[in-house]
Amino acid sequence: MSDTIIVWFRRDLRLDDNPALEAALRAGARILPVYIHAPDEEAPWAPGAASRWWLHHSLESLDGALRARGARLWIGQGKSLALLRRLAETSGARAIHWNRLYDPATRARDTEIKQQLRAAGLDCASHNGALLFEPWEAATGNGGPYKVFSAFWRHCAPRLAEHPDPIAAPARIPTVELDGGATVAELGLLPRLSWDQGLAANWTPGEDGARMAAEHFLAGPLGGYGKLRDHPDRPGTSRLSPHLHFGEIGPRRLLALTRAALPAPPTLGEDAFARELGWREFAYHLLYHFPQTPEHPLDARFADYPWREPSDTELLERWQRGRTGIPLVDAGMRELWHTGWMHNRVRMVAASLLTKNLRLPWQLGARWFWDTLVDADLACNTLGWQWTAGCGADAAPYFRVFNPVRQGERFDPNGDYVRRWCPELARLPDKVLQQPWTATNTTLARAGVGLDLNYPAPMIDLAQSRREALAGWERIKTTP
Ligand SMILES: Cc1cc2nc3c(=O)[nH]c(=O)nc-3n(C[C@H](O)[C@H](O)[C@H](O)COP(=O)(O)OP(=O)(O)OC[C@H]3O[C@@H](n4cnc5c(N)ncnc54)[C@H](O)[C@@H]3O)c2cc1C
Image (cartoon, rainbow, N blue to C red):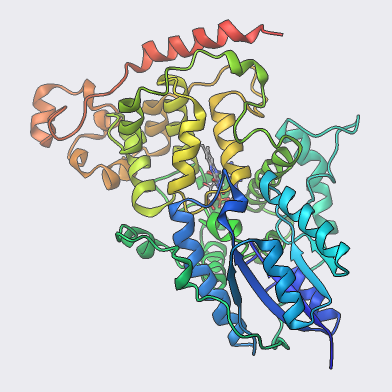
């Protein structure tokens, strides 16, 4: 009888190009595929509500794919270490393979598990299934981590060509039958009150859904990605972020697909896309080297920034509900609430309004995104929030405050995006759509808009609040 190896699935919910699975199969073993639901072990960043919804469907999809190959997903709940130990005993497994995670809580847990299981005589091996480059592979001239994206990517991009080809999913998976285990439904990941219709209408979680989304992107938006990726009014990006987060498609496969889809030498679109994947790599690089950053600013001077009292919950709630009175921001926050996703350009603008104009601590926004995004990812979310708040890895020599009106005029020039998510403004002329407070009463009345009646007046004076944000920066910028 051949050996048994446990493959512990986590955020690598796929069979294609899965290094842990591949290594176990290469060893000629029977595979016991396992998923353990242990949100406490991810605290304080246990998956939020939108992520749990996604996870439910992704696990069902993985189980289906395993069953189609003769295996099934054994699902457990509780302490990972205890469960893995018990599973190894009952199945007679001699080894456990998994793909690495990089957030501080799961890193510490996995290190502990590796030590304990090795001490118990089990062979444990971790692999890279999530990244193009391990966070420790890139180092500056003096051996430290990068803090500037362009330098990081200059180091990494030439090495992209060195990647081995991704590994195809196995046709069959020899397995060992084990009784017990929970069903996906028993994990209770779905909401009790059904608020998830918008998610279901917009997404197909799972490996097949990831492949479909990738193919759709390759056949269309990829060609114009360099030009259109900043436009929330156009379907110009891949929308692969939740699939990447849950590991339903690996970055190596994605890169290989984009390379194959475009003529050589790479077009602007392809390079721009690889570069965005590079931002994801950079986010993991930063989180790995600065594990305090989900809570604390990378730039320590920001500990003294004059943030507004977080107890001012009315401002936060208006922002969360898309009732700020700033159309582009409201459109984004409503898109997020409805679909679990927001376009990157609008994420930056919405985050800038919260942290710069409203001067609310960025951690509040990061938490809201964490709960509502289907792609909530500790590395990328932390990078995005710190970058926008100005306390992260941004090489700009000035304190950036996005002007949401100009951003709307530039990236949503016909107002399609704002009109879609703020239909009460739909009949306003383009000229005032991004700033209805400048419209005359006649224009407003003709368009059926009543400020503070069916659409809020702006909750903040953009120019004045910008000046205050800059003054706050002046106060801390020379702090040693
Ligand atoms: C405040 C804020 C919060 C964010 N929170 C998250 C988050 O929780 N999870 C998340 O995946 N992304 C986050 N981002 C980054 C970015 O907005 C999303 O990755 C992107 O919008 C996903 O859409 P897409 O898949 O169509 O991207 P595409 O443009 O198609 O890019 C392809 C992939 O590259 C990666 N990528 C692209 N841009 C970035 C970026 N700026 N930083 C890191 N990776 C990037 C993503 O994995 C993305 O799926 C955040 C950005 C900001 C400004």
